Image (tube, rainbow, N blue to C red; front, side, top):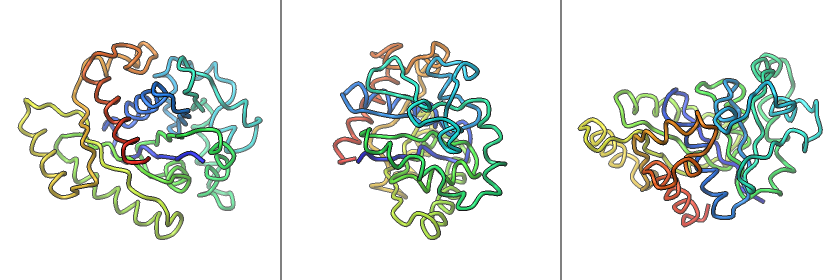
Length: 254
């Protein structure tokens, strides 16, 4: 049974979707069967893989609410070992519908139960908020990766997320573990980037991935071409960093 891993941070603009798409693609490239689930109603992971949300008939909404057969919610991608459950337009109203449902925090966990047997990894790209979709993702997950941008206020947002994680572990998913904190948007020429990275490593030690994701133009450009960065420019620093992260996950036994 494969791992279910949330990519989460309630702060926006930290590289959640970039990480979700590219770690999934990097693991698929080394022959791991991967499923990316776009849990964000904005649908950036879906569009970043080249799909028009209006042209995807079924997606995460349909999986959660059972309005389509499981297999019809899955979309093939350009990589043979990477598949997608996309964020269609109706996902925007999902949290409102969840509000009045029984056991609303476990809807996604139940929906992914049989899919776990078909994949080595299922990655959940979470919204930049702590609503029902994010809580569902955390309850459904074995592990969480927290992307943390090497910028001002980063640690403040991290402390808020760690409080959320403790609450979820205490009440809803006691087996949820931190896979690691991933430093993103790192600029070695910038003193602040180095200071934030040093402070995070000093405080969280073994919980910080060795791999650091740099600021990289090719990494920023690739979603506009509907491709993971390794298919856009495999030799760029961004692509090499996510390949390194994939290797680090495998080495950790994840």
